[in-house]
Image 1: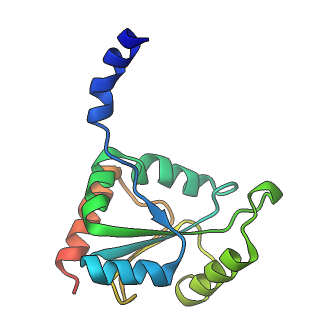
Image 2: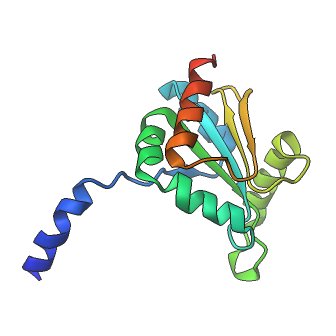
Length: 148
């Protein structure tokens, strides 16, 4: 067992933590204001939308993006699952519906928005972003440099 730990331990040190996703937008805005960060809001269908699942696995869970997000972004996920076993609480569904009314009235999935700490739209990605995690991270960085 010790041998296995010593074999795996070096790899654990180089893996970026996955971004922490919040599900309360108002709390996320407060955190963003306090920590001087931007908000990345993602609308997803976690159990039915193939591009949404791919986006989380290939972009959001990538080490390059995760490291950047940890220092610069407050991550908010507005999920709209369809399977009964994954249904949200009524309160969470109400929060997500309100976000969709404000930022995703067309019902696009996935839809990712970079927002200022006060909720103003800085950049929008409709669908799966072009390119890989590094390119997406560079797009976010560029949008932030031109932001507030």
